[in-house]
Amino acid sequence: MGLFIGFTVILSCTNTVLSYLPVEAVIFDMDGLLLNTEAVYFKTHSEICKRFNRTYTKEVQQKVMGMQPNSTAEIIVNILGLNITPEAYRAEYEKLIGQRLYSIDLMPGVRKVTRHLYFHQIPLALATSNTAQFYELVTAEHKHIFNLFERIIIGGSNPEVKNAEPAPDIFLLCLERLQSLYPELRAERVLVFEDSPQGVLGARRAGMQVVMVPDPTLPKEYRVNATKVLLTLNDFVPEEFGLPPYKLYAMKDEEKRYTDLVIDE
Ligand SMILES: *[C@@H]1O[C@H](CO)[C@@H](O)[C@H](O)[C@H]1NC(C)=O
Ligand SMILES: *[C@@H]1O[C@H](CO)[C@@H](O)[C@H](O)[C@H]1NC(C)=O
Ligand SMILES: *[C@@H]1O[C@H](CO)[C@@H](O)[C@H](O)[C@H]1NC(C)=O
Image 1: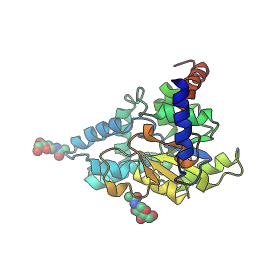
Image 2: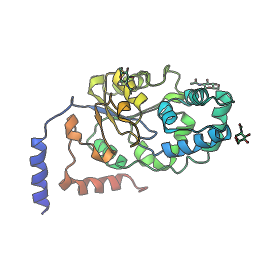
Image 3: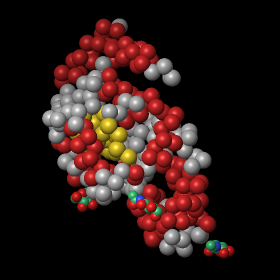
Image 4: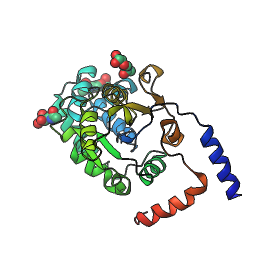
């Protein structure tokens, strides 16, 4: 039975056509892509806006997704016409959310994709627009995943990231950092995983391919710039991007080695 499954997989692999440029390194976004943060953000923004008799809508949420905290506060205050300064809004927001970020879940498929690529020695990096303070808080429970990244760019606390997404700055800096390990790496050989339209556009402007895993409610017109759109990370097909395929018959072995590697699971 095991052998039969193995043969099936090998056959289907050789039949698979490479659909996109082959990939040599992968950059992951964090909020909403690796971590299910958006639900917590939405609840917190809604609460603050409600105090001003305004409704924090999905439309506003889509405008601020992937933005740095300062821009987020400014956009919300301006769009909804809140009678508060962006600085005061941000302070209020951080006060509320600080207590809610310790136990955020991983999104579906995160373990599968990150560990598979790590196992096959594909260089992995993280690019988040959030701040270092947020990063420490939300990743504390998930170090077994975040330790897999060779380079981590925390845009909200990094003065080298001059312009927020949809500018390409954060992705170009991340590429530069990866190039210190892999000097031959080029932007077109980097694949970015993103959930937000701003992040997708930033990565495309950096010359990279982008797999988008958007919030299911995100309208179609916000997805147009992605190289490929997936429902969840579980639907990623590595060989379409020239990456090693999942091999069902080897999975057990891989899982075992991961478990050996990662003792806190
Ligand atoms: C919000 O609306 C309620 C009911 O209309 C009103 O009593 C309250 O004063 C308003 N609050 C603000 C901050 O505008
Ligand atoms: C964000 O705003 C704070 C307070 O106004 C300011 O000190 C900080 O430099 C700003 N950060 C960025 C990245 O713009
Ligand atoms: C898609 O890319 C074009 C060209 O850069 C840009 O003008 C447009 O705003 C982008 N759409 C979205 C939804 O990001």
